Length: 352
Image (tube, rainbow, N blue to C red):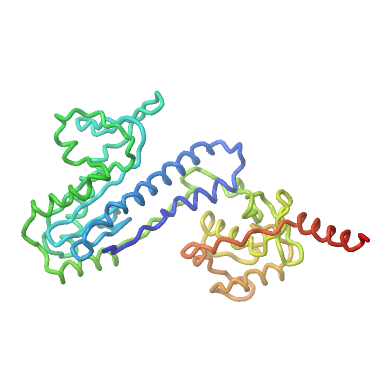
């Protein structure tokens, strides 16, 4: 069964918000776009693995995705953990294109794509480190002793592995998505005797979930972006132009002419991702580019956000916008087309 579902890595919406609010000529924009592409590809690879994992018997396996656990002062992260009464399996998922060669002597993965060669950390070593960290975590949390296996799963079917078949260690730990269920089955034969009771297995699963700590990611600090580099204003959900104008209780895009009622909600979510998860009336006016204190107060109050502080220094909690993204907006109304239709109707009425 699925003990912990996939969650979109927080870095993805944060980088999307950042790119939305940076100049096209920002000096590190290409680097940020590259990081976003890598993050999306990695997450897509993890999702694609579900097709094969869903074939595992629900009663025998507990699958936990995207775990981040703490050992003393440091954290370690596991893409997918499969808990069985006989063993634990750690999956390090890689969605990588091109030709790869894993050099276990120097602990590096060499990738060649479109004539360009890049060097990455050895994914097998990464998975092994996760095994060591998890063993330590289980001991510190007084869990029963349990055998831990680890695999690197290549989810891109077009990846060409350049290692020689003689690299036995590589091929023991490297597997393609389609072969994963069969590889898991071999572990059930290799560990025929259960190490856990059903009750102990359930207890460990619940403890892993309880100790999971979601990752935070300060994109401004990581890419050395100043708050003054951030473009303020409400962005158009239709074409992402900034800023929109506030007129008659709605937002109007000067670029695509669409009219949107709650466009400010999506922009306040950007603020929560990039700046901080709470906001004052003054900060909201600055970020949304509004002048009216009362209009801003109405906008914030209508969102039913929890608050702290007195009227003068009241802070609104934007955390719900991070944890529960706003629903996709209805198709925006184009102001120009609406005007055109009304004019056509008047002309039609005058026609004899």
